Length: 185
Image 1 (cartoon, rainbow, N blue to C red):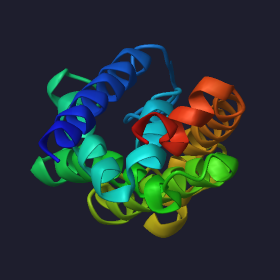
Image 2: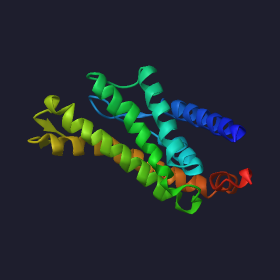
Image 3: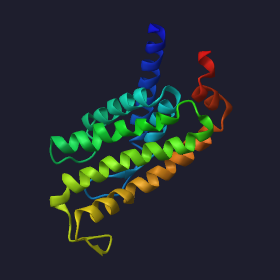
């Protein structure tokens, strides 16, 4: 059992490192943060292989590390926790479909949607006081609409990248076998 735990932690470290590298290949789109990238792909793949518990842990580590690497913009400690640690931890819920390589695309959608929910909550609560009067040519009257629009602006393309990327990778025989845990038998 101890060797299995060491293996999981090593794989988590590799996936977190890959996500960190991918986080620097991005298109910044929001005036207060938010970027389009493929950062979630390694975290989602790891979550599919080892399940949502380990996936949440890897996402938490990545999100916290991402903040400390000086990425993005924060308002206070609550925005640090929500927009980094908790948001990326929720990507780990992609692991609810553990070892189901045929549903990897759905896992990616679940993990991305879970992250969006946290960013949405953060936008409604933490960032509401900084809501502009106009965003994307639309008049902003409520933080609920603004948060949905702002976060969809970068999360939707990132979700598409993640779903397509995870789907394509899961079609590769070595990745599919890795996701299904064939090497563990």
